[in-house]
Image 1: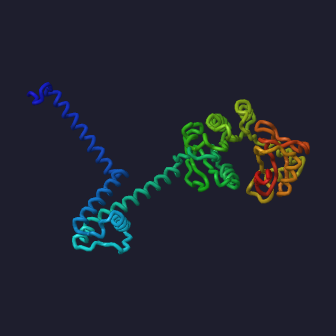
Image 2: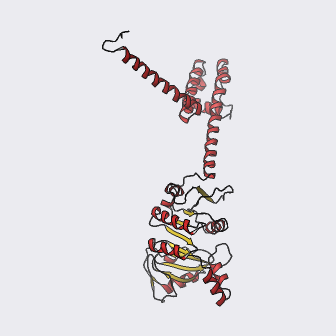
Image 3: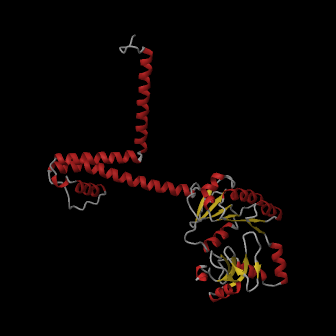
Length: 363
């Protein structure tokens, strides 16, 4: 067989026609799936087509009062929303038939479909977050808690939420699947506590605080190393160890990390020598107990002030100044000299019933 197109063989023509059929088949396949899934673009296109055709039909029916663009949009919307104020309605028999047989079914179906899709989207977001698959990478100034200890983590969450500022969000990254989720926190579930993708979803790269507290020192060690590689320089990273050797490794490789070591033996010895010391230390570290609690504040970029002046200023606000820490990597100094200047970056530790706003000390 020869082609009617000179220079084109029959095989080439068959290949060309097959290619066009494949393209057309792909086009129909995409349209079918779009209709089946009812994507937003398809839904809005159908609503627009239905509204335009309604406007044309009403114009042909002589509905002059509904023909204006603003008036028609108002009437069409109130009809679709099933509000039906009654201030506008078709006046002709043809217009009423069009409304009953065409507008009501199409517009109301479109409105209910939109409501169903919005509710489904909200439900999907809720389901994803409940299952630990949420993404909180856009959050800033959040507190990320890595790891879960069945007995201790709920208490830590209570302590953190008791002193959580309005602009902060608590995010928990854990391997466990939590069914009874605490409404005060966001939840990220991962098979590994060192997963970069999971830490990014939990918001570690933009967090202001990162706390690592797992059920084993080896997990805490690996998670701390992974978190410090992602956390911003301004973030404060804290980790807890039972074993002194693991704590020493973090001190050597990540000196900017604040390491908390289990103080059981030291606390027992102190309580033996000074009865009641354990109760005092416990009260100072808890926001849940009534009375005084240990707080800290960083002196801002303001002129230095003598330690004794700040001690008096805090005392006037019901707080007792205990110590000063010149830098993040240095040890706090208790009862420094009265004329010791407190400058930008120095951290003050004080005991008070509530946190003191540093702005009230700089005026």
